[in-house]
Image 1 (cartoon, rainbow, N blue to C red):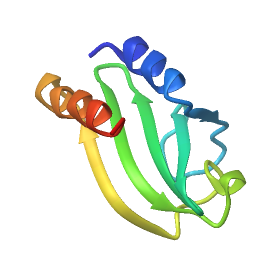
Image 2: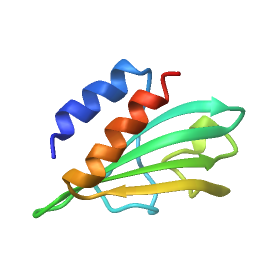
Image 3: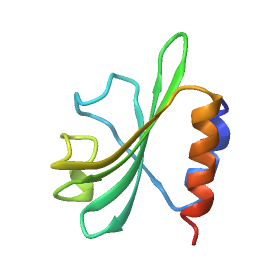
Image 4: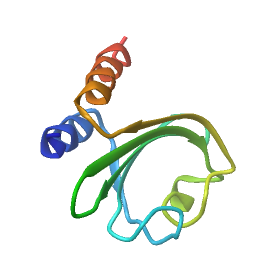
Amino acid sequence: MDCQKIVKTLKHKDFIKVPYKGNWFEDGATVYAKEIRDNIFLLFVILKDIEIENIQALIAHFDSFSSIGMKEPEQIMFYLSIKNKEDLHYFEKYLKVSDN
């Protein structure tokens, strides 16, 4: 999976890299977020371990942008785990559809 391509796409679509200091994901997680409605955020979390890169996409409600990466969301409305090329295909389609 080409995480560098995904990160470049997220930055191009105005996602902000959020410092991760919580315990919701493992250490070393990289979180990108974008507010899509009041306190509703689209997040992409990139987890890296020795054998696999894993990307998790979610739409979640936080009390504020600053609470992302510090504590768990109040509510998760959508969740997708991307672990292989087939999942990545759906992810790329989602990014294209979300432009409309």
